[in-house]
Image 1 (cartoon, rainbow, N blue to C red):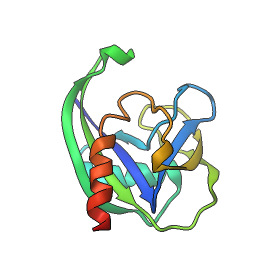
Image 2: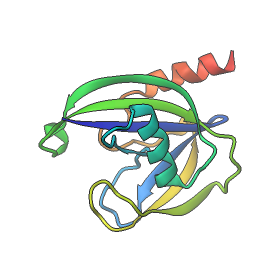
Image 3: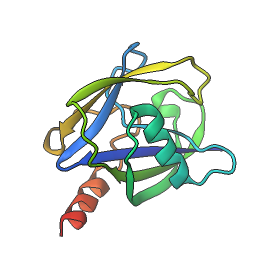
Length: 146
């Protein structure tokens, strides 16, 4: 059973989303990927977020939760352990940019992402199971501002 990480990266009142430029996924995604052998889920979350976005000043806020998930309902014949993390950055970036992930765990060549910041109040529909922990993210954001 694969362990996978999903990262909600925030900056102030914005969430980072990415889209596959080649159109392989139609809905926006959050950064994430597979936990490598010998790697903790936290290490994987920070590595995957950096690989997919190019951001280098990411900080762990908290683990939002984990659970087993059968993915057959979204067209994948596998069960995973999904780990969701809230990361934050104060790194200055453009409102949107392009970035290539060169080391995809799925064996593809370089993957080009269109990355953008969206207001937390206007998050578009996210693909796969990426939306599952949005309520926990909102709670984490409230805790972080107290």
